[in-house]
Image 1 (tube, rainbow over the protein chains, first blue to last red):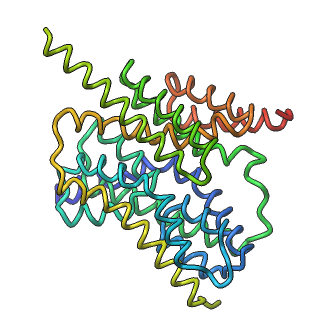
Image 2: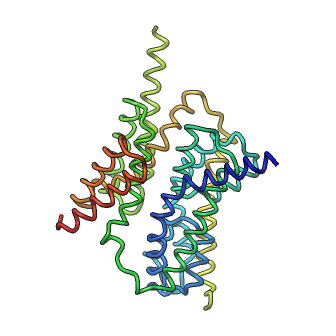
Image 3: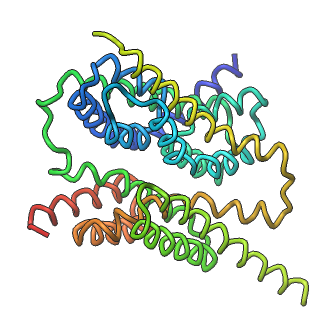
Length: 237
Length: 100
């Protein structure tokens, strides 16, 4: 009895942690749905893509490239490129899943959308991650993404432009707040600077979403170099 | 409401690609043993990825977005998360309204 009570507390804690991101997600999901029917997908297909793919960035890029009939090769490759950052994200979060069984880890990774990953990384700084907490994050977010897309597809042209009230800015804003939470002093400053500089240059020079990979790798490199410097200092003492 | 075969095949390919990228980090850790220093460097992934994702929005979209990002970042150190986000959204909406 005690056990199920604490499991529920864990689940609702996860749901609370993701709730501000769900508020930001719903208008974006509706825009996705409206764009999808505009490209000739049926509401059912729009819903199915969210359920199967569950990766907002890749879904938007796919709609941008949509053809009739759809080309599974080019859309599959595009999804691979857009989501390549998940390699680093899943490696990083897996190190914080000590309370998960092997199967639970695999299952968790299938739902590793950016927002879910970000709140989990944030949580892992304060408390160990548990499977029930993670379920509490995933379940409402997954449902909100799929259902808001379906609602957008059914309402279609009735929707206004969310940019008018700045709602498109909600995700960058949430990510900036999360970055601030990872601040640990000078070394973090170096990582942010390297990442932003590399992402800016890559975004300017390269098509597509290579800037995310470029920024992530530059930040990782900066951290490696800074960490190495500290170790040498310690060895010299 | 129907589902076209080619569309369904495209969804399958996209789902497979996404799952592959999401599992790859887990698979990588199985075969690579990390030193303490490498693990520490991996700790830089969250801020580095998040920064890279927002950089075009912050620097290459427009003045309204750049200012709103700066406002959000400053607010993040003083206000709770939801308040800082709301302030950023309000800032960008007002600046766009003013024609920036």
